[in-house]
Amino acid sequence: MTSSNQRSLIEIESNFGPDNYKPLPVVLSKGEGVWVWDVDNKKYLDMMSAYSAVSHGHSHPELLKVLHEQSARLALTSRAFYTDTLGPYLETITSVSNFDMALPMNSGAEAVETAIKASRRWAYRSKKIEPNKAEIIVADGNFHGRTTTIISFSSDANSKDDFGPHTPGFISVEFGSSKAIEEAMTENTAAVLVEPIQGEGGIIIPPDNWLAEIRDICTKHGVLMILDEVQSGLGRTGKMFAFEHANIQPDGLILGKALGGGFMPVSCFLSSKEVMQWLNPGSHGSTFGGNPLAAAIGKRSIELLEEENLIENSRVLGEFFKNALGDINSNVIKEVRGKGLWIGVVIDPNFISGKELSKLLLKEGILCKETHETVIRFAPPLIINKEEIEWALEIIKTTILKVESESRS
Ligand SMILES: Cc1ncc(COP(=O)(O)O)c(C=O)c1O
Image (cartoon, rainbow, N blue to C red; front, side):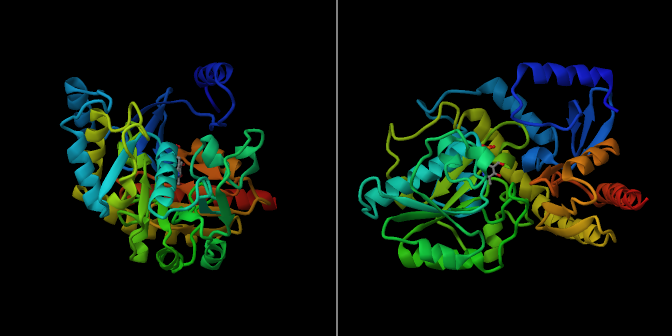
């Protein structure tokens, strides 16, 4: 039962903000590590991690220190001036990802927009595509953000209906099919832009060789291969970047979410000098992108992933968690899939909806949320330990078995 204290806060939020989210009925007020507390001091294990943005856990002490020190020293300058934080941050992020350059932005969607603009400039100026003819191939079921251009190539009606006119220049093909990508290539193709694993789409994992095949096709046709790793990147799948599972290097990479260390929006687009050379003064930018605070947090967030072994933890505990979820013997579960600490449990809606199951787990002290109605996503902070996962597993198992037995009676 949501307390009256929480109900009144929920009411205020609903009265003064539109219904563009439908949150679970809990009002959070504190977080530490993998745990969060509601306003009545009830404790929950965060298996949602702000859609994978809180990989370092809530209020990571090292990042909190950086936040305090950097904000006390210098937080915001705009890019009208150089700062002593941006260069070192860009050097760190390009060196871990093996790219020449990074262009800093704030939200994931802004970094996707940056990738689209950079690809188009490159296509017109390096590849010499006719003006305004550039095409970008994307995948059905994609999620790349919420701007007007990005929703133009979404397959989800509610994301795009009555937000038109939509931006042209995108061709959407079947996710996981390299044949479909090859067939969609024309002399006007500038880039292929895909997620290595579709997160919001329901943790959909493509065939093993898909990324390597896209790499070959893009190289053959002189087209940029751009990966959106806003959600899959920075250790979430058990490698620093999901493209490492395929042993390839894309031509462009989009990062966000965990780059902000669970504190603030930090994103970027990474690519080669060949692509970035066309982004001259005035062509692109952001007042807040690359600000000293974001740069300091971004740099330390990346370093901590390796220093604290979070990527390996994601790989090892992700495998353990996925297998244990798969071992739950219940008809409620149709499939368990995922990579690293990024797991989707597909629920049979004849027993319970994803939303109702999330509510039952909330009552038991686990925060998670459904995606696409029937998939429950488990994506805890990468700092989680085995005991915490075992604690959650026990609750998940008991809850699911109870749902099944009650549906029989
Ligand atoms: C793959 C991917 N790209 C882009 C975005 C958009 O990021 P933001 O919400 O920070 O704009 C998301 C958000 O979920 C995402 O999962």
